[in-house]
Length: 213
Image (cartoon, rainbow, N blue to C red; front, side):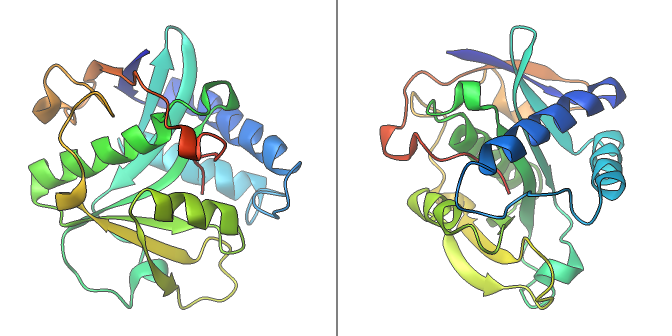
């Protein structure tokens, strides 16, 4: 299956919010308190999304005209979360959400691989790092299955997404049939750029996991 990955623009903010809201509705049917309500408020959540879009940190994977997934990544750590960890170059991923209509295709893991490869190429990132909802143990297992190591929890016990995971970028496979296939992967982060990506094979062992944190 082929997806077009493009940098989000200001007109895409509502689409990203819809992806988040759709995931939150699905989570309410599961045994987790993740995204039971916008944190710390709807206004502040939407403002975080807006800032990331305007800063050029957010991407959308499109199936034709349908937003199938979104990912946000940047090289700068949130000091509330990562203050206790070394300053090795890394990419910090958040708001990875795959629409339930595209669950089971491996799109989320492919986007993670893409983000790690790009960060390694562009600024020598040694790690891809994630903050994951603290109480969502199913999601913790999902990232462990993808090769991420659990590091511990952030300093702030009140922060809801405080479980920290990382994976060495050197462990990310090269572009092949298991993940993203890009015509020119090393120009992928250029502003206003877009490419086609292909996720041809489902990853059945994690097919029921939703990619979000």
